Image (tube, rainbow, N blue to C red; front, top):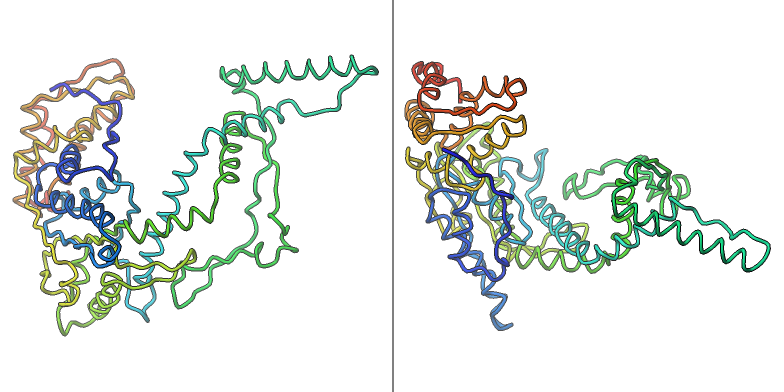
Length: 466
């Protein structure tokens, strides 16, 4: 089966704010096989964000997001849906495992840190957008500064005004020649000395009641006289022309961006369109009367509850209301059940979507249909070594069949089983690829079954190999 590699595996789609639920689902279909109910629920939730902003002022604050709880075994696409969603939608998006948090009073991260992280992501997102807007101007300024470094300014020489004018004219011509060479890429072997920030000042973290991640204290800011006050110390570093141009462009963009405006817009975007994906929510679903490690599970749920319900969280960039942040939660719920969550938290996730285990047909489609399929990835990896790799349809059907068989006999880890099986099939080729440059290798059904015969036949071995 010949695989055609796309120019980009992650193509930009329609403007996110104009996407209909159907268009969102179609985009998710390019990367995720099946699980239509989960895709529809997420697409509707995203569209409802857009609909809320179009409401009259007296209704905007009344419409709360409908949070979603995705339930399904591991490896069926819960996390992948959220990951692809973050790339398709220009909203601040944070994925975090619920197991990272601890109850207030225990050592560890408090649940409010997820909101602070979301704000940081929002600021980075808005700053990138503003940097794009000023990119052309920043590039022009950086180019001029680089030419100044390549041809430092000196007073005009000459005893008469005519001689000085000739000297200045000659310098302008030389500068334009350097500019042309820079555009043509002929100065890449040149290097210049550029001033950069000196970040060697000592710093430490202060542990506060809001969590260790809320305060980073820099000694340069506290004691500016001792550590080079004012705008901070600068040092000179030699770099090639390409790197220097990128560095100067970043510095120019930083001076052109209004940080206060970035902060205001980022806070508003985090509040109005932020999305937090809480993975492994089932791991904090403890049963009543539990002891030992389960003691703090219910406490974590109680701490998450006000964040999901809507509260105000203090961040270093300002206060953030969580009333309209969309929360997506996911869990396998192998040991626990959704009903093991505290009732108040269950009520804050009114939409429940069940993701189904993958069949042999689903596994075959995962190998072939998505734009970033494993087969395309391995084909591209081997192409970097000069090896042309192709798979027959029979080989892919055999891979899907054997993966499903091992999933049935041992722990069902869904599509993740394909990663290990493909790696096992291509182990010898990956090892020998540098010596086989220029060859064309076809993987057929016989090749696949021989490579995986020991793994599939030995049930005890399968338990220890994913």
